[in-house]
Length: 333
Image (cartoon, rainbow, N blue to C red; front, side, top):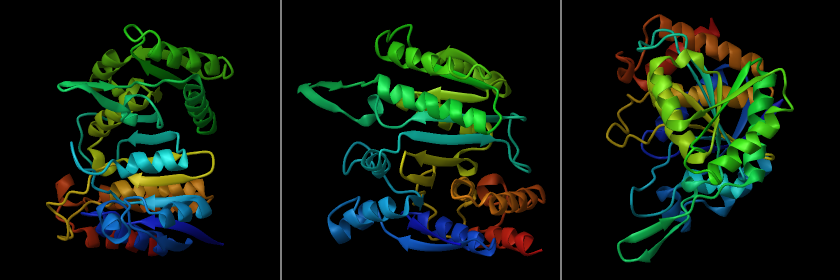
């Protein structure tokens, strides 16, 4: 069966890591027809839009996309392409599994947790305006509808994947209405999953506990802004953003992406680490029913890392190309 999937190479190191990953997927034997589209500044130069209509139409038709990193200007310029995709396609759930990889030295072992982040509202939506010069008002929007569906996603994920605990993260002791609504919504959903343990933690306390004993956590469900911060914190527990995957999932469509930046300082040098995008692609393979291929690629990746083949960000000397070559060899063996 051939799969039709939208490919967004991105910019900076994006084309290099997407090239490596698509080559690995091809070597696995999975038949994929890629419909390639640009986003961000590259797309704006050609079409006048950072999210061209043809790109959105492609994802809506194919239901699945693999996306490399796209630059988001800081403090000026166009708005985030990532946020734009999530809003346009209603990709309400951001999924980030965080687990130790063999051969990657970290301060912590036995980390195996999952971040489930609400993706459509909260302060992260960027609803802000100038009240008067020198005063900016940013709107934190929390709804029962969005909070309930992200809670359902978290508990359904936990049930499907044999997870035993879901923890809601909030600041309801201070933001009693907004975060209180989020927490109440998750509690209501938790009552429908009696086989899964449920608890809740205040955001500042959970950050402390994550860097003291991260292995105590299982599935964390969070509002948008907290989820963005905590997911990057958790990536640091296992080696950084270069070794964790990301997925943005909605009712109809899903976009799988690396969560790191475009690293323009090393773009074009064939030294970027494709692991994060490869792991995101493995989530994508499972999503489209190619679990066996995902397991084979994961095993090959683990073998390569355990043998000490790594890109320079992980202390190795392998190039993007030679790292991908090593994984392909193990797939062919």
